[in-house]
Length: 261
Image (spheres, rainbow, N blue to C red):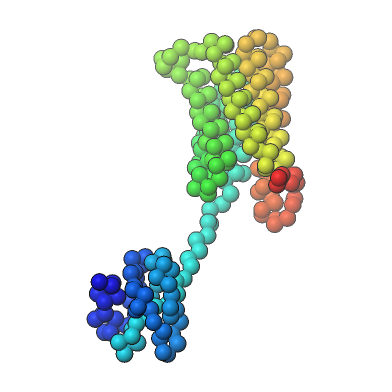
């Protein structure tokens, strides 16, 4: 039995009744309204999917239905990329100033790694998941968790949670992240030139750090430190350009056109 008949008594008494997707009007019920009300003759298939349809009664035993209305939902969340890039950039910068030999490893680096390099990037990645950006979500969450894992590798042995990794193991750990970064670099070829430069520099950095661990050569370690400083500054530049360009609604700092083909 048609759903319209189930509500016929209420339609005659109270006027229009709003219904959802479950409306199951027979085609016979959708005859022309002599008074020209909108929506006459709407096919049953269109009514079934109507997100916001209205059924009414003419008071003369005839029934009518308005055409379904489209509902548009706008994404009001901000672009999370500047947050993630800033967190990555400054944490990388401070760590590699240490690698270049300017100060020892200390709690400042670990704290930056946990909160700005780690947590901020994971938050940015989760927002990108919500926005449907697979590339950004994968990159930010992965590098944020990299920072968590790096801090854990450093502090866990002191807590009695495993032994300190050998140089050979650390080399493979860093090289695996270099491989991941190379994969992401290929994906970045469809993005801006600035972001491509970040991923390219980061891939080189991981390889240099891995070679330093395997060889024990301090010169390679310092070269890696300087290269890491450049990588961090590239990320900070890219984040700054996105922020300023958005705030001023014009190109303040160029990012390089994205590749479209």
